Length: 185
Image (tube, rainbow, N blue to C red; front, side, top):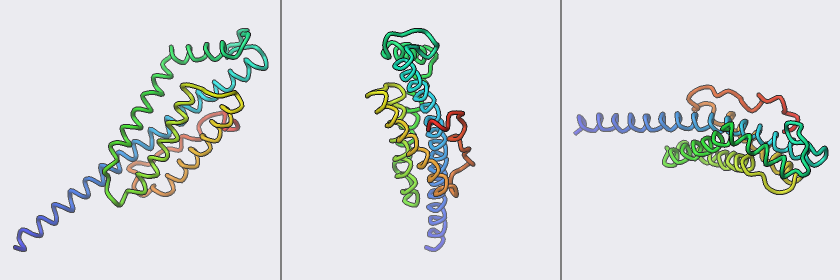
């Protein structure tokens, strides 16, 4: 009986270890994707906010062309971002994030808190992605909402790194400080 019990236990432990390793790899990739999505959406939000402000106060769009109202300026910016593939890229990032979240659903119990924190991060990043793709509200409310959301995401990223660095598969770069416009966030 002991001859069968030891190999069985070894097999169970090995399978459990493989599942944890796979979870950690997916979590690391998902976390990296969340950071990328955050940065790319922040760039679009910044362009949108600047264009909106410039159109209201100076009657110019993002390229310096005269506009009679801010809707025209936002429309021009939106078309440019659509044509250059920026919105498609943001949509792809959102889909990838949601796919990672789904892949992590039935992870090991030892990683439940990491999963919960990842879902909070994905939810907030998705909200910023949505605002980057489809701005809503007034200039003031849009600016306030996106700044608060970006600050919250930055804190979540920093906390995630501190809490879970021991099982993130590879060292994940801090991409949240790579923009030149930090003072706006």
